Length: 357
Image (cartoon, helix red, strand yellow):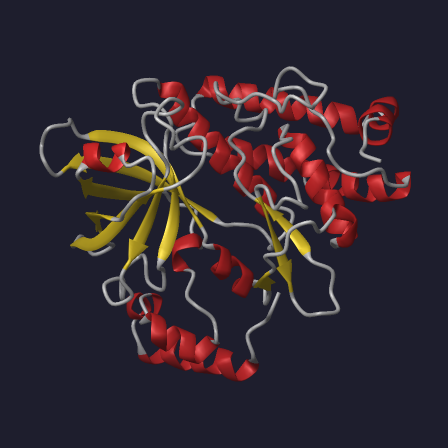
């Protein structure tokens, strides 16, 4: 990951001394870019939930399951000084499985901001952002699923900066036609691909058919153990399925970065089932999808999880609005993982006998 040059740091310090703290925080996106060479990422630097209102023609948006067009909308929130901020935004339905009304009555969305309207707001420097929403409106379980998928991203953040940052949102949906009752649900925003790549001094490599063996070896080992920990088999490096590849320069091996965890056992969404070719019947059943490695490599990856055990449990317990019932389920699921990696026989079975040749 790139570090800020000394001259850049001096420039930022000078701005900090000249400007009030609040003004420094809300630097114009272009000013920040010219000083640091990087885009601002204020939106994803806090764990505090955002309280937003999204005003739109709800019925028109959620019925556009073929992603035919952008829909006009407005996002509003109250800033630190108590001022109401209103931002025009375009909304577009996105996704594959969850945008199908047979599967979910409320689809995931993409927010598209104008560069000029986000200056001096919490969305400074942002353009297009994925919004992960609840799947079904009338069942609280789906809102808890959103929180646990958010948790999966936060857990992977513990292991590497080469991961997607997320921001939890308490979202109020207001229908501009007044025909649908106001709805309050939890959601979260995902750091855009290019922003995550630039933060790490890398570029996105959009090339399929790259095998796990041709990516950074230790990092793919850790990623594979992480997916085992959360019970996720819904990913593939060669197919770029729920994975993006980062590359810093031509001599480095690509780094795989995972996303979309709603089909994992930790989340346990009602619609999640394992692929037919897998030898498991439930997503709650862990199955290692990494390649076979010498035991010393496996243990090196497992050590990262052993060392971060307390952080993992603390992160699980720190998710706002997660019910005690769902937290207890999550903790027990983590307990099973740590019990496995501390048992030599279980490690042999999970990571050596059931690994991919």
